[in-house]
Image 1 (tube, rainbow, N blue to C red):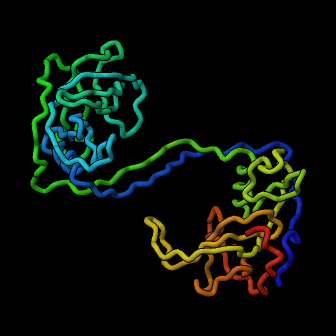
Image 2 (image 1 turned 60 degrees about the vertical axis):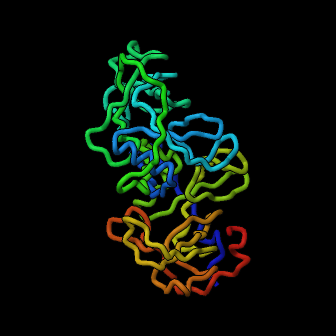
Image 3 (image 1 turned 60 degrees about the horizontal axis):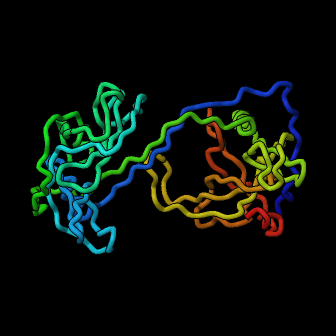
Length: 331
């Protein structure tokens, strides 16, 4: 049986002056492939061909962008119509600081445009010299992208237009050669992340191959990674504690799907590991043992790579498994 949790806990002397809080750029990205039904397929393929399609609902409303089910009756709808590439601004908001990958790289207006022949409005960008040039009720037209692939970005933006429209929606059969059947939906968030005082100490400790937590002065639970405050007691945690390095597997899962940009062969085991002295488990990969031999209670220790900023994985220590009662509260 391994040593009881808490046996290896030791206090860490606090520095005379607090270290500089870390800050770094962070990108959260989740692109995924979406298949298209017949209506959305026709809409995006139409954009590729330089025309805008809507759909007519059971009460005669023409919706652009189109939907595949009637919002009032929930019935499937398939009656496609072609509307004009001109329309009227129904409302707008000025964007003076465009972000990367937005439609325009110069200040522009976000506008809702009711295209001639449609009864609902389409959201897109309006290229205008300034907010004084934009107004509700102004006439605009589509500016098509030079190269089109079957995406909403085939509309490069809207631009001011002096003409009028017919207001008619002409029937369309939705038939195209080589229709668009799927899209990749890009989801990306770029921002500057600061881990705060407590996690800065934790990260700095990892650079020295130490795992630093913080103890709540009220309930005495040691949080790893530290949060700066105890979520149970609502008090600040300032008493730094070094835990581990060894710990106990409390729960685990076997990963059978290879992640992109992750050079780890499947299957492998990802586990919750209660480091000795910690009041809750953190997660890490288990190596050095066949995946089907990993088990609850397995005693493990960190493995560091040369220049690594955190443990690459955890491997068995060779100790007897921990007794269930020693870690059951940490599952």
